Length: 347
Picture: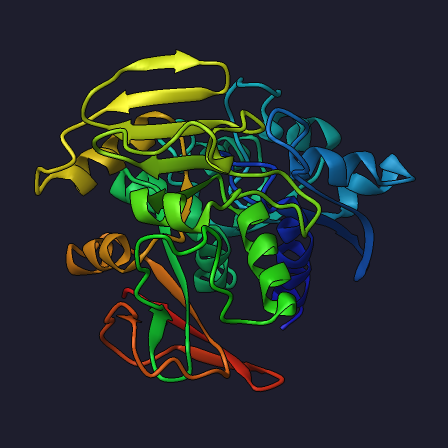
């Protein structure tokens, strides 16, 4: 179906904005005249022009717009925010046909953009590849439907199901690598695509991670460290002030440089839902959790997860800390020269 062909092109270019547009959604748009794309664009960065604007502005001959169809994977906005309403530009250019993947769930849009276009005489078709459109913006839709960030759990485990050795006192600080450097590059790519990254006290202390994107070009996520009793020494990498960091703890509420201490009852069974509410209020749309078994299992047991990415290495540990237990069958499995990536969804 020709409409699906052009909508898939919208998906392709929309993904180019991953990691740069949040809390806005990923949006791509193409302008088609006589079965030929004459303009295309995507939302490149939060606060900058939207996809429809870029697509229309990339049309060399504007006189063709009145006889063209605009495709976009998400309903065009109709409100004044950081940019002007896309519906106004579409109407002004004389475009009479608009094809949309899915309706925008944000309360300031939510069908209003479609109504405005139709009231101006545009023929609007919605729901083209609707499920694929939803999946593309699963972070955005989860954020507005469930009023919490989209949660991605990530861990690496040995071939026999352990995530680490038991660390004895005096063990050298640093990560115990399970997978190859190539999969570590993939993990840094994942980090660049999410707004925040979370670990607990033990991971921060024993692995001393930087939690940045040094192996992949892109923006480093906000670091969220769960450290209830403020046990972590100041010299750790997570305190290097190179990126925004939030320390969730039970003792202090302050901001110093690029680091904020957020006071919360970490022993409360409601810690995770309260934390989700706090991150929602902070406009953090997605979090990748790279903590240890306790933190990961807590999110699994309470149902606060949407996706799990499990990397399985080739080496055997025989003993140590067991990997988190997750129910269900992996949705996908990918092989990387003897190593594997399993993806689970919390449906």
